[in-house]
Image 1 (cartoon, one colour):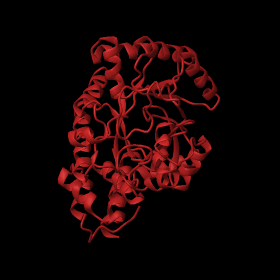
Image 2 (cartoon, rainbow, N blue to C red):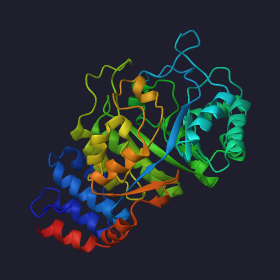
Image 3 (cartoon, rainbow, N blue to C red):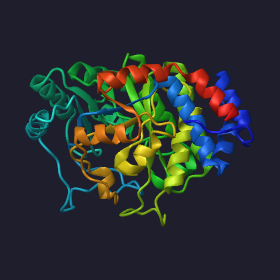
Image 4 (cartoon, helix red, strand yellow):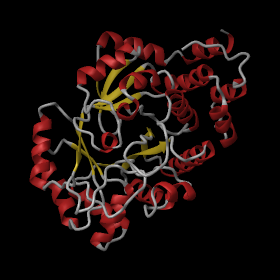
Length: 389
């Protein structure tokens, strides 16, 4: 992207970024306050290209929610049900393996598995599920459970979080999901998810997993009752933990969907808000290798645009997504691999199929690979264009 920042109000922040200097919380708030989305996008796009060149990734995966029964009643959640509700569900281990078997025909490399805090399933259900899935396909990467699920499982097993994670890893867990972060500030968390784990508990679960050698993603749910300062505070705490452990592989901003819940928000985040949040995340989280534009929440067209605003990944094929769609998402339930490749190419990027850890499995079009590698070396030219165009 070539764009003039010579007379922009963001020139000083751009110069910091080019010099490799970390931006401050005050800088991040300035970026949130700017109306110059093009300049903001140019800075974020510079950071993206410096990190990954002209590539953008996707994963061939399948989502499975093992149950929506939950002992919590988070105000923002449209997914959870009580045992008395007619539309509650839970799957047996055998049914989950059958879902994996069917999805294997699509060439999936990852299963993404989360659920509610089930009131009665034993700890053995979860370890049996992991072992059964690994027995079906040992190469299948299992990205499972949010931090609050881990705390729930530790309570079920009457073990420490470290012991619980160790046993889950031994059963086949490859990666933790990043869900459940919402917004870290206590007052906001109480307003949207009363009774859920605290920010410190969320971070400590991921810290412990990282100390055990594991890796995970993390998220932020934006566009409800939080302030812009709350968003920056959330990013600050993630950046600090990444400085400590280097265990996060990617950050996934999640646009809030206001339907079917008890939070009085009239409209979901605008495209402007989503693009600036993704761009600022890319600039601020300088120690994160990847930023994902989650097409389920954004829609594929906006996710494509986000690839020029700092994002370098559009997530996965999904197959069946329940949580966002029960909250009112109108996006499709799945994208084929061909759809993902087409969307990335249309955005001017070289498609790369990745695994759970954002490691490349294959680069699409060898003819374009050389171009991508050339572009990834062109940061000084980009700097000159941005500064003087």
